[in-house]
Image (cartoon, rainbow, N blue to C red; front, top):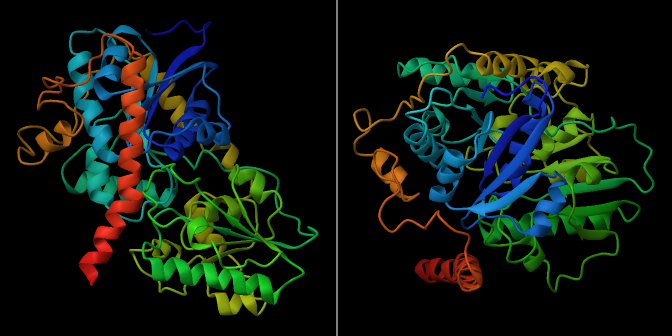
Length: 435
């Protein structure tokens, strides 16, 4: 480092779920100032994506391996890169920032570190942002988010220079022109919104009712995962389980697959608060954000206040098509006026400048330190087997060798047991507690 201008940039992406892998890799490709070599790392945990989930994302890396936090830090010590994208939950970002600060402390040059959010930021704004503080670039997916991010950082006396406005990296596709035969309605399911059996059953029943009211339409329930797979959020009550024995109408189907490909045939996108709504709006596909369960922060649909997209199943059954507000769309960075093509220019320019910084970059300086958050930071780091100074704790998974066959079998068994506990045992215990 810095890499020769004639060689591809070496970009590493560390992700902890299928959604964040998608965001991280697509972001890496959009913000890189030139051609890249992409090395992927999947942080081992409950949401580590399966091969099927990775294939559905459709992004290929030049190398890809599963790692623990300690293994990743060792890789960053031994395998230099130019740019690192941390596509993790906030606590994971914070742990890596402290671990990397220690790993790179004696180096004259270090990689540019980038992080951000997968989609709509509708909860834990302050907590999540401060856990991401310390990266060279904290990407904001819209003008609205950039303003909110800067206000939080400035409000606590932390530097806000890292905040960089971009857009969601997975927007695109052909604009909607209508005329599909048959007319296709897609309900974009979410793993954890809503989170109760009653609410999820209600939405499923309304989807079934819509299909029966409109037999001339094709109605698709777009699922996020298959049984046993995890995503960014835990899905305790998959719609495919709730649909068993319902006797679905012939024009209602459950589908998986790449959201962009599903949107290619969509005439109306319906959701509670999925980021798929922004993908659809970017393509000018009529989009409805449901109000049936209320407009509440817990659902995330409060983010769409002012969008013109809020509607109920009763309205949709009667033929209503929401009309989006253009001013709201512009603030969300999902306008179809050509500006999306330049949305990543600023990030690319900033990374190019940081790579060429004379003398290299200063050490990473997260807002949270043992001085500013002595009662919070150690717990955040310990969840990733790191001590308060970013050093792997005794007993952390070894980083000096690849796991053998026995270790791999044990890991698969343990992960399966964990998922069984989350999906079967924990909900049962909660139900017992409600009796």
